[in-house]
Amino acid sequence: MSSLHSVQRAFRAALLEQDDARRAADDVLPDGLTAGARIAVYRHHVRTSLTEALVSTFPVVCRLVDRRFFGWLADCYIRKHPPATPCLFEYGGVFPAFIERFPACAALPWLADVAQLEWAMNLAFHAPDATSMGPVRLAVTPPDELGALILEFEPSVTYLASRWPIDAIWRANQPGGEQLGVDLDSGPGRLEIRRRDDDVVFRALPAGSFAFRRALADHEPLERAVDAALATDSAFDLAGEIRALLDEDLVAT
Amino acid sequence: MHPTGCGIGLRSPHVAEILETGPGIPWLEVHAENYMGGGPAIRALERLRADYPVSVHGVGLSLGTAEGIDERHLDRLRRLVDRLKPALVSEHLSWSVSGGVYLNHLLPLPYTDEILDTVVEHVARVQGRLGRRLLVENPSSYLRFRETAISEPQFLNELAARTGCGVLCDVNNVYVTCTNLGGDADAWIDALDPSSVGEIHLAGHAINDADGRSILIDDHGSFVSADVWALYVRAIRRYGRVPSLVEWDTDLPALGVLIGEAKKAERLLDANGASDVVAA
Image 1 (tube, rainbow over the protein chains, first blue to last red):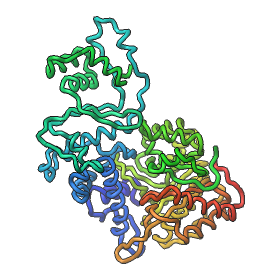
Image 2 (tube, rainbow over the protein chains, first blue to last red):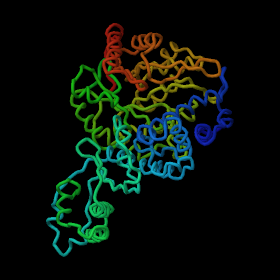
Image 3 (cartoon, chains in turn green, yellow):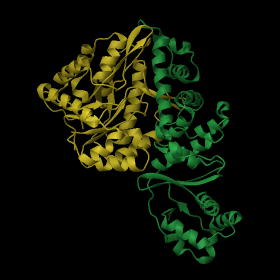
Image 4 (cartoon, helix red, strand yellow):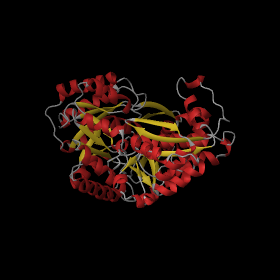
């Protein structure tokens, strides 16, 4: 008698790693239909339901490449990177990197970055609620220790830089957005993506603010974040930027 | 609040309308894995929780896995159950995890004494961790394993007897499985121990072609079929007035259509379900 381990390994292989279901079929009663046809029912459901999960997390990528191409791309991804947890809103984290290396996507060099934007939006939507916010730690930190201060950003925020105008590409691919033209040479996008109230929003930031906030969100100490900002924008206004962090509820204490 | 009558499976496109209009629905069931993140989804559910009894229905624990229950996932389920304090918690007699991969399907198990021991151990582990009774649902099946030596209802009876868990009897799944595998759905219903049944599921199925033979697919994408309604009446005559639930996932209709299906089940419960069954 085969062990449960080996039954499940063979079944997994038949569903994902290969289309050859012979090993799994040995365990199955044909019951008037081939064992392979019975296993195919399961394979079809696994592949199509995971594809649907990716369509729902990456709708703009799907629209940009069309549904049939996306189906093929998703199927290749699913076989290489099947989910590791049963929470499908967590599935697709390395899909952008997969697109980046997928030869058939090479003609669309901005596609992987659009996928990054959609993944960041997905993370923002499902992020835990921020707990306590406000200026408390900044206020009680002695001035000579401020430079070493490490801030905790609210959990939904992602900073994403791209050499492509991915925000414009995203907007032009929303319902009713067809009228918006996209100038692919309009320069790099530096985006802040987060949840405000119940909505996921993103906006483009000036180079200095972006460098400052991204460094802080990566847990760099304040003085290193200031250096990063000044390196891109010599007129960087530190006091104004710190006020903005607090006004925008970006920093958890 | 304990569920009575027939509720509906809560799907995200209906949430805003239910919050806004507060329709008369006896109770709601949610898929646990959709609420394990933070943000608007779980907050909306907490608001609904104030007005409707809620059941948490897991699809990812993989009670039949050979690899042991994923403790991190069980922890997440426990946190959700602690937060929502649902009236019912249920899972499936199936597996979905192998080699650390989640296969997103309720995959079938060979029903043997050895595998019964494994599932008993896992159900006991989950109930111990959650500190409450679990209901375990029969899956829809498209194949049988050569090794299978115990009938599905008998397997569930043994599981319930040895762990104290309840059974979530999905009558559509009974119908789909028996049709696909040449079993007798009426005999299936009759073989299940009525005292363990804590909930009944209803849903629609599709009829597909597989190599020239029709095979039923449990897609939750249509009205409950006449044969499944008949099986439901048989079930409630035998099991009593068990809390029931209509599920609809594929081609989700307007909320009113789903409520209409639940009302149909309510009328059948009133006419046929002898007495209320409490499955706490």
